[in-house]
Length: 361
Image (tube, rainbow, N blue to C red; front, side, top):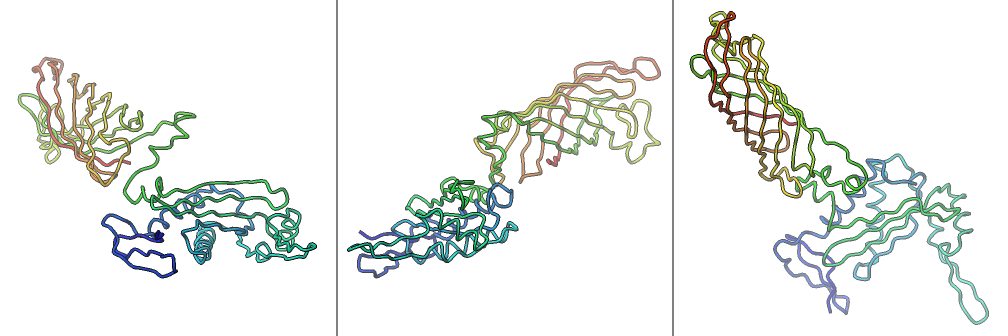
């Protein structure tokens, strides 16, 4: 039976036969290049290095590298160079080449030839480490199957042989590959969810253009909004507060021409405060390369000069990329009297509607 060594979408498939010959055949559609998948798995190790998640990398020596039977032995050198490159690039550690660690010693014991190595002699390993200035050893195991790539690593202390760090990286759940697809892994920290709850705060600035019920008819208003919410239920829901400042667009251009009946007069005192709840349509994991939406409902009110009234607002937000979105607003103001110079000037009630542009951070 032939054994597959590499697969690719554009590169040919390399197959080793029983007599050592190689045959190149086109790869199937949808398959990824072997070295692209390998780069994703090594990228997960690089991520741990950058974030200080790898213990025991001071004065490190790579001792053993084991590969599965369907991988050529020459691949060991390539893998060692890749791991060494990432360690030197992302940490200040010193990588030491330990040639005596891989030496074999042959002795004659009666009629038997005995081959030994420092791997089976802890005292010899400790002596070699002291001589070469090695503080830790790293061992690597590499396995390739048609379903994916698995790299297991562990770091030990030479004197005691105790393991100070161990980790396995699997291409099937590679974080590097997921980041390339646009997945935000902050939402999927399973260990954190199982131990303690850490709130995720989402802030956004909003610029609205709204048609607001006023006296005697609706006013076209520009509005600035700031919203701060806490995300929960794996980021599928949000709860928090929103504050708006409304300004009649015509009074922004000509503030001196504003009359006393302009409830939302620019540069005057008016504040809208809402209690906000939203439902995010993002699936099990949020992918910034796909269209996402959010339906929200707000309950609160507006104070503007001689007017104090309630407000129920609903909105649908269409999110673009990671930091931007467009909101479609529809709300209702229950009847409330407006007082100008201490006298009732009329009742404000009706539907508010408009558009908003959001900046999330």
